[in-house]
Image 1 (tube, rainbow, N blue to C red):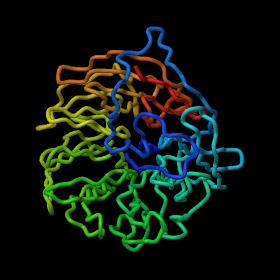
Image 2: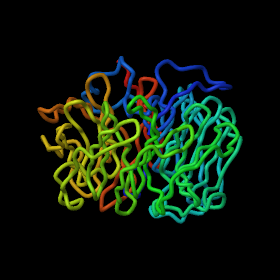
Image 3: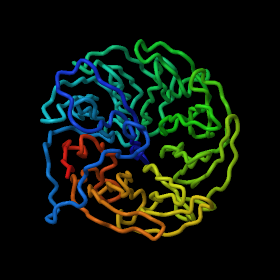
Image 4: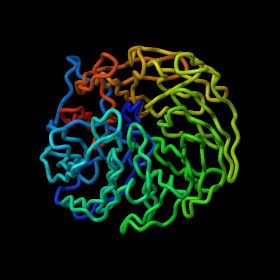
Length: 432
């Protein structure tokens, strides 16, 4: 999920078998939703390169032209799905490519007039489930399309159908498939912040929560106290819902300035970690029907930070340490138990407001994709940041704060990385 400044991001995670495809099944894992097959922002494949070529040139499998957008790609069953926006004609599109060749298989487009700030294309990563792909556009147009040919199976318009008041940077939260359900941030009236649909028919199953601001954080299901809980972090609270009914299990009030709840909450045992741009972090201890704050940041705003004030990237939480990018580009390590800062480094990111990098664990090390288009292999530990290898993955194309940026999360699948800017989508082979 990527919210644009979108002061974003904001920038989730999912798996299923896709039916009725003409392309053959490719070797390796898929990345069929925000955050990957397990929605955990982890690259689970092995057999990946130890270092990049010494000349810094990554082995591109293919490159295809695309239009502008912030959303990341989804990869499933030999196909790649990416949303973009064509400014001339004001078309919002979902594109489907052959993952082996980059050849376009189909495209779906609709006329959509943007009103959101930072109108450079869709934010939410598409979600692939069986023979369907779900796509939420910036202005709140949700479509369920047939994977085989892009035909519309059902669709909703959040503003017309549910009375949604569009957030300033548009709809950014990628939806969540859970069994027969599609759980989505809608921001509708009459208890409609979160709405659960039948994923096949689009029929409403339940709705829950009121909040005048939608926010941008993707929904996620974790188990606490032996109970599956749907975690919804929205601009007035962190809420836990029963995924089957939408009933509120517990809630921690937390007012988030500008609605900037973006990074996905991270679970560690019976704890839940969250981080926001202005208000900083909180660590919660969670039970089956209750939660309490264990520790929180003491920073006063995004310039005066003691722990972690992330605007877009979802942090990595381990038993010992938390790794994430703070509000001015500082890659930081916190002590998980106390939240105390262990170290910080600007080597991977650079320094400036909203500078960022996405952090993806793989095989005991970390892949970082920074907003300058670099792909980095690094060791992150309590001892510090140790860079192993770096290469240019794709050129930054979006001007922000007098610099060129990329605010789109790549997909790691088929022993490759799939990345986009406002001009092209590329596949780079990272197999040994």
